[in-house]
Image 1 (cartoon, rainbow, N blue to C red):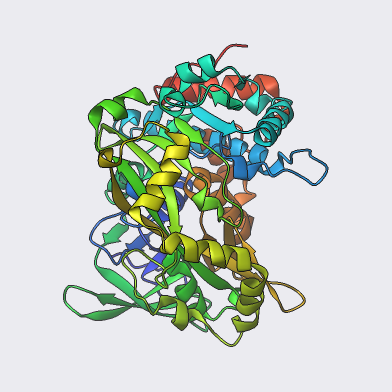
Image 2: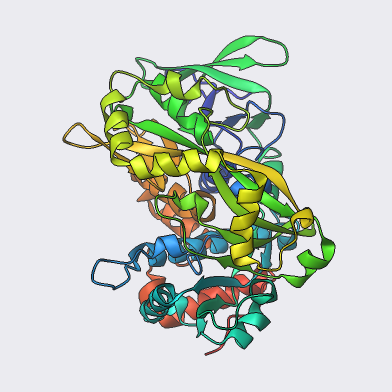
Length: 505
């Protein structure tokens, strides 16, 4: 591995990335494009990249663009719908697509069809109150050009054309409604991440190390970081040092952030939520559905548990999933330890964690109910979306673990956050990503925010500004308020990513 001799204090690497998921891959590629001479070391405890949260079976195999996810558009007490988060996510997804298109043009990935394909995004509801909500949502979203191509219908015949499985066997008296975004996508983040690391690992001064676990993180007097790494195959322990460390270990990020002992990381806690899918095994049923259909979450359910009937392309083959069903485990990772949660409780975060727990009794009850569900209970939930579903056509598939962020409030209490949170040291020498959905889909925007926090001086240079705009042409622009730029950008990225042309309207 390379030695950096530009500074008085010798380091093993300019950058160390912990975790081989979509976040580390994105940050590593962006940094390497901005500074080709950077030395980067990547450490992953498993034997393959993207085996945890970024894997297609572990919840991240989709393209969250806020077209159909109803939890991103909460209804206010006055009946109106708040679209701010949806607009933010939709814009962030456009940023991700621009970076992926840049990767394709630079031949960093061989073929965009390996990771992204067009799949229409639908929202589907039933019952008078829910129909009124969906219509209000539609009217609110279509005022923003990011959602201008959205279609709305209350016609059962039209919905049957869009998603026949949800209408087969449904009572004709039931009031239904749906929205559709034809330009929705399915993204296999497992495949994308592995493609990114394959390219990155071939670059000069980059090493990708599997079966390696980080045991300690210590700040050196020089300002650099020393990390103790254990080779899980040989048992050998080594020390490495770096100017900058990124902790992108999914559910494993919180324990590592705590090991860093930075003041900014104090008070954070984690609430693990596990997931399960019902996976269709009947090829005829799978072939009949070609969309992502999202519904409304149950009261008290976490956002990752918003029920959806989801077409995904996994290893080149179409799959159909329903769920996810939430559960509780004290593990922070699918391949983690049952001691993860208890070991994460520290003196500085115990009060926020207790406070957040007391304020989320409904969530706790919901998770207990989910854990106690029988196969018949899960199938009953499926039949609400697919009235003609047959029990023998579906089997249980275990998804990944998510760790929702518990954030300390100024009052000393805590609040449970559903989203992602970048935590960075004041000097920008270390950063960690906590949280869950819609992380993978908005990874590029999250990493750009990280650059602004941790590489602020370099980011302001003309050289970096020019390079970033080469990767993301709309960097610094607002697509939500610029109809022409939005259409032009979507047309360009669609052509490169081999997606359908932007719907004309």
